[in-house]
Length: 436
Image (cartoon, rainbow, N blue to C red; front, side):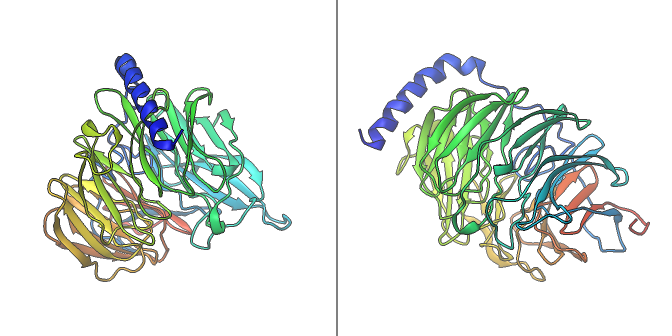
């Protein structure tokens, strides 16, 4: 049987199941919007709806504190209550080649950056290499205020209580990543379910786990090579679905059982940017060796959506390679590849408000933009930063710089901006005191 007829049967079965279990579909995590509990924030769009950080900073201005972080990692800060959670790969001194790492989960104090607790999830030498512009800890932690979840890819998935007490761990085996690019996708949490996408050069799959026990609830094979995009879970009112980016195909899966609900055209090679969603529409993009940006209306997405009315519009120019897009109000912001070339799209029409436009003073960018208080923040790999106004015209509000370099994406909580650099974690807020 060919793949497409088989997929049609699976979709039909999924529709039957969907009708029967919609009322029991997993409810969204009740994230407190003051915090930054996961990759891309409480709304999974890159926006802090209650945040109001400063627009200006430097090494001697508006730095409440900066603390050295051991090891290396591009994992973004994740914040709940008075704790910041970071993942890092810390070299073990005196270890033989290949270099052994302590895959480490850390909880730091928001007040002063002091270490509350630190746990080594696993001590192990990596089984394969990575690019110089990747890290051994590129996935971000996730927290629901009850547990902290840490994913180190081939080194396993771990759950801790908020005080660092281990709860469970799961080992999925070893990934085989093309050209030794390294790993980096983050799982997603929805209700009581964690979803992991395991795309690589071997047997790829997507799996759901019970967040309390680590028990695997379901697994679906995927015909996808390496991807680094974090999946997105949305509740459409008819049940929650998991949306995944892919080089070959994009998919929506039923959260309850993993059955595919729809599939659409693939993106580009090496999909990294995470999808974003609002008002019934999901936006999928990538930009390596090509350009792809697609808006999909989920209420019309069923079965094969190629060429259907479910695809509202496409804008296949100047799309991002590493940074994820920012969806702020009615505007989708994205960069061209990893360069400081910005496009701002009106999501209703699919037409640009402006762009592609150069963000003067910035260099190469890996960190995803974030938004708060009517502003958009960009951080480059050399420590440069630009703050612009959220809106239909490009209005620069401030240019800033720090001595560190940044690949991890920022986090915003209350009036605070957290920047994880190669050496330091910074807390930026309005203050007349020098950095501590």
